[in-house]
Picture (tube, helix red, strand yellow):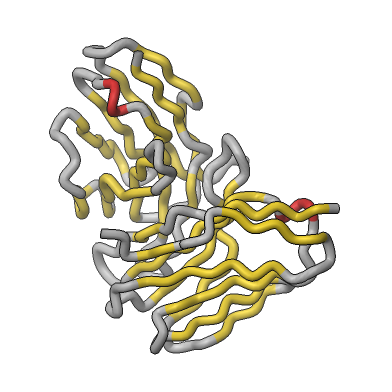
Length: 113
Length: 113
């Protein structure tokens, strides 16, 4: 039972354009959402997060949007750079004691020079 | 100066052997985790420890035994290794009371032959 879904396995974007990575979740109890970036042979690196009380969080070129009614979040990268090429994991969790993250399967982003 | 470090990075061993993976974090976090990334690329939580106390055990076979000698270390011992244990194992840590962002180690690729 996948509670966090990233339905597109890959995305290819031209350098300088916008990358939009999508994520859906089924558990309405989740109150915190995160994006991680992962290069081959490395661990996931935290990128950006959003609390369920917000609908947008921005950090430089990265913006995460949350649509709670649709149980959907997206990560926008503008402008995309070749160094952004990596696997991006969406994760969700519950704040408080005994918290844990539930991850999606990941999406491979390729940014073409 | 690595925040979450785990050793070894690669581990190849025969079925039936017992092996350990070590993890250390220097972030001062009070919670540590073990995640498993299987062949389908899902990252799934196995265990979490808070201040050396087991908090989460996600129906992992009892051949897997985590040990936390102090809150900066969480080791994973695996008995009687099976082919299906082949995966990448990630250690992570977080400071739960502030956020649930977890910081990951570089992973240990375990191959059971």
